[in-house]
Image 1 (cartoon, rainbow, N blue to C red):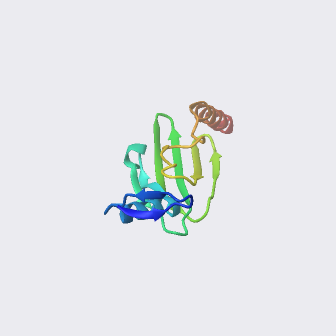
Image 2 (image 1 turned 45 degrees about the vertical axis):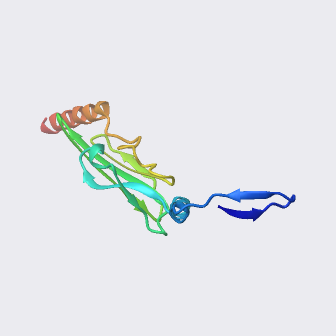
Image 3 (image 1 turned 30 degrees about the vertical axis):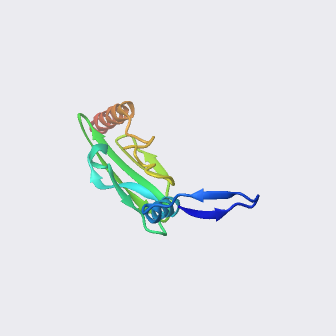
Length: 139
């Protein structure tokens, strides 16, 4: 232990250990470096749970979701990573949906999809309207 003078005439003893430099590095990394989940073109969120340390200029975690469905067939693609910009956007066309979600805290992009998804009701309605259009065009 080493002595550090106390301003009221007493002593304050501070215990130092060999772990102090490591603790300082960890605190510095936590304060200045963002960590996000990362994956590319995954079919489910379970494949998107790998944490990565972002570059110094990348201060956002981003999740992109693309979903397509037609009849009984559907598919989705999820990608996650770090980004220097926050391009939040979303579109739902009934048979297809796409969205980009961003956040800026430690492992904040854990969710596999955002609020924009291809709706089954809208898909069915789109197919029904397509059939009606095709039947009317034949007459």
